[in-house]
Length: 110
Picture 1: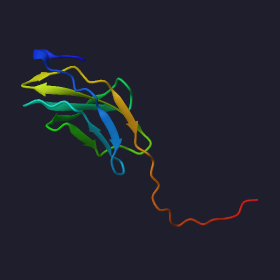
Picture 2 (picture 1 turned 180 degrees about the vertical axis):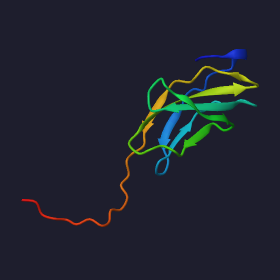
Picture 3 (picture 1 turned 30 degrees about the vertical axis):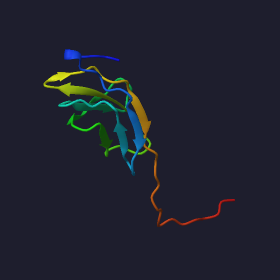
């Protein structure tokens, strides 16, 4: 477990799940009065940049994920201007969903 200024602990046990199309849902179980969370993400492990700041809840839904792309995330806890170290990284890829195809002509190939 990592601690920052004034004993501020990094969020732990981050879970990631699929929401609806193009959504990844992150959740964690750390909550303390007055603490908000910053979420960092990228498509490269270790390259995460700030994505959401000041998240008051212990969950966040990434609604901008692209199907077939793997995303890496970590979270930090923030209290009165102090920020914890980052949590462990988690990753997931949004499944590619195929919409209904139209306007196709099927031909036989021999």
